[in-house]
Length: 373
Ligand SMILES: [Mn+2]
Image (spheres, rainbow, N blue to C red):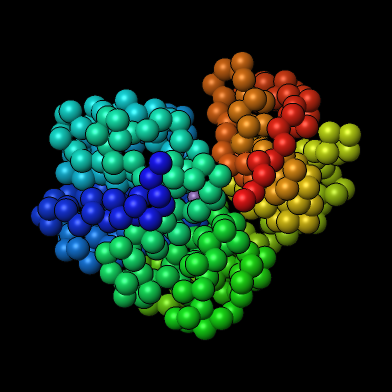
């Protein structure tokens, strides 16, 4: 088995050999960890001399490379294609096609559970779980380590960006080396996930998620601001991001405050199912906030959109909600579900709601959380 350190070195070597005139496309997960990983990647690409870089935000989907994404990539015909924080190994066929058609060189930098080792099909696959199956190390943290393999100064200068993404993915507690090095460079302000979430870096992560919820193009706009600014204070000073944050925060607070009143509680199965009515995609944030209050309960926040229902699942201590989500969609047509043990998502057709809900309740006690090292 490879060590984590050798994985980071491999990614760094791959990035260092990129031809400077080549077109690089970075596809990143549409969340705080994804944005911060993409910005860290831009910093590295700039450092190694690449001037032609395009970015595409993406929602997790099965297959990860959706037809619209494939269309963009076919138009761009990148020389190099970089995925950060995206579990594209779930279906590598589109990547094989790109490689064959345009001779695109592909690297995947990810921390989601591995479905397949892409190295076998000559795609550079750097996933922390192939070195440590139980590791929970966000992609932004990986980017910090990879940057450090290229230049110690580079990693140090932008450790605050990796920190924001790591907070966004609830990964601080497992990334204490980043915390230590960040504290040495910028002063000690916190140690734990809980405390870091309350700092301006936690707020920056919130701003990113508000941008995602408030505007169709918000995530890419937030990414551009983050890439441009020199500090977290400058990021938080953006008027547009501030407005979006206030607007979304009001709706989030309303939903969180009504949880205990409106959620369907199943004390025997230790699960609460909460349907929120709003046009804004806040189920994930609302689920995280409620889960912080009830860390041993499975919290499922659902929201209707068109003929589908999207759900965010959380359980910080007792249940592996990634496995639960997968099981709950089994047998349903046109359904998606899966994720991390502590945080997962599902999307189903409205007509399957009752079946899906019962499957959640009936299977919740079946998947104990993996024991942490
Ligand atoms: Mn992530």
